[in-house]
Length: 93
Image 1: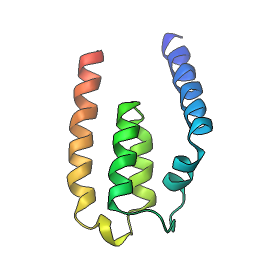
Image 2: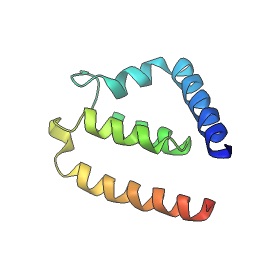
Image 3: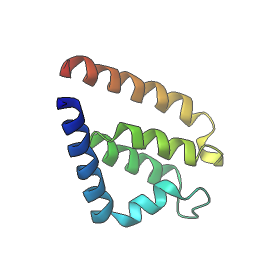
Image 4: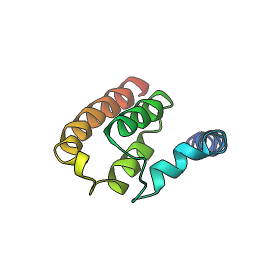
């Protein structure tokens, strides 16, 4: 029950974030977005990590995985994200 309430709270927080930042959400979800580049990708990852939206970072990476700037970047960043995510899970218990 507690996990269900927590998940609902996180979902609501995420939906509020989307409403507050619809342009960023568009960049995250649009595969052929012309404004997406390496600097934008890094900025979005930092913003999402700050909010603990780790699942959305994975969505961002998957949506844009075919971009030229992603070659070599995705392996490195996925390893870093996975490490940070695991640490946070272990700390939260």
